[in-house]
Length: 107
Length: 115
Image (cartoon, rainbow over all chains, first blue to last red; front, side, top):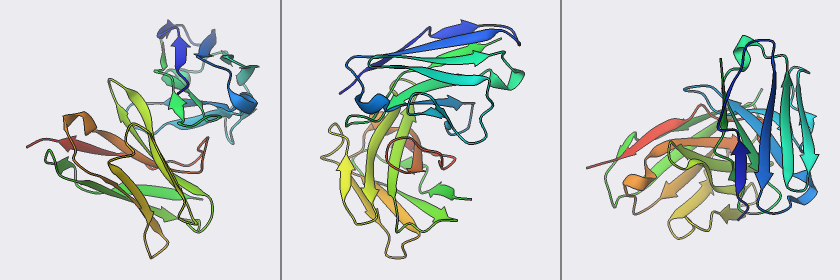
């Protein structure tokens, strides 16, 4: 199965700063089938990006996804207080679907 | 607006069967794939498996011998059975719509395996 490694484990930033989150796959992901989710305590994951770079409905344009093959990035340009949470990457190009262990973005 | 809601016992004894149901509203279940996940502090988010409305299923290799996912005859719910549970199956279980990325998730239900 494809192992996804997210870095850093924790990102300590201030509101208004830029966040860059990395997701590296153990092998190339088919068709850039990679998604990003945000999760807050006690809630289900919420889709942010699909297909490596397509923003989900209702997601602000300060969120952007990029990358291909084995290296993917989620960028948040100008952190809003509501953005401080845990972010997960997920690959769905190969079975079984797998997730990274997450990056915590904290103040 | 599609809504999903998990339901089932919050406590299951070791060696017994964990049974959960996901009730779907706002969209017919007779389309698309429907998926189960679970989340633990140690292993994070884990894909359990999914079912297509035709009845075709796909299961995680690590759980395949213990898992069954099926669609209720009412066609408004789909269910998960996980047998021979141990403490390692203690988790928050989520249902979601689709195969791949998921826009719609249930809020999750916590299941503890303990005697």
